Amino acid sequence: MTDQSPTTDSPPVPLLNEAVLQTVVPQCRNAGDWVAPLNGAMARFDISDARRAAAFLAQIAHESNGLRSLTENLNYSVAGLMNTWPKRFPTLAVAQQYAGNPGKIANHVYALRLGNGDEDSGDGWRYRGRGLIQLTGRGNYRAAGSALSLPLEDDPDQLAQPQAAALSAAWFWKSHGLNELADDTNPANDDEDFETISIKINGGRAGLDSRKAYWAKAKSALGIA
Image 1 (tube, one colour):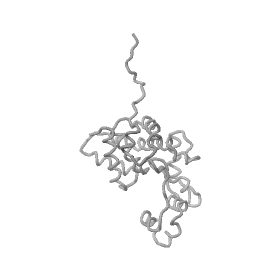
Image 2 (cartoon, rainbow, N blue to C red):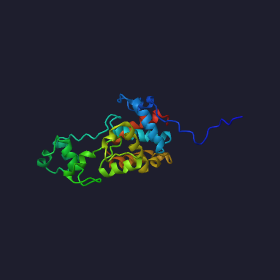
Image 3 (cartoon, rainbow, N blue to C red):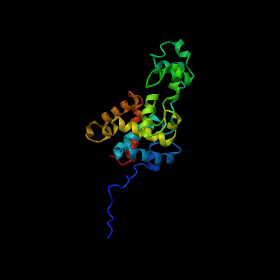
């Protein structure tokens, strides 16, 4: 009799489907297009159970405006520039030179950071935030491209497509230890762990309420009490 028992090489069961995504990000009109890229990326980078998936989905939903925005919006007003980057736009006169010019803003605020060249290099705009976790800077594009075997440094617009966007987000997630933070090792500090995840992704607590709202939806959709 042939042994019909499952082997250890069986592919993982996909965690996401269109219904889950439509529940978590109802504003996304092409949720079905994300199912395969996200499940493939999550399987590759060990986002392998419902708790990890819920935290991951919540964060990428916030970062991408519900899976709808894969490129950073840098069209800031004078007030927006001064509020967002007060050290780089310390006066009204300085901010007025850049307001309403996304390319010029990107080249200024990201100059000589994150592996970028100076303002005249154009790296700030070329390597502005893209993907589901808004990967930013030549150095990060190079690192992600090397890890994923994708030419992201030469072709940065790949990150604005579902396949590379999903892979880069899942790579960032695992490489920054976020699977372990999402694991339910101590239910008493789940909120604290989720906040730490947010800080590792965003550098601060911006949008924390939105991230937590997506997290609640994702946990419910994935059957987590």
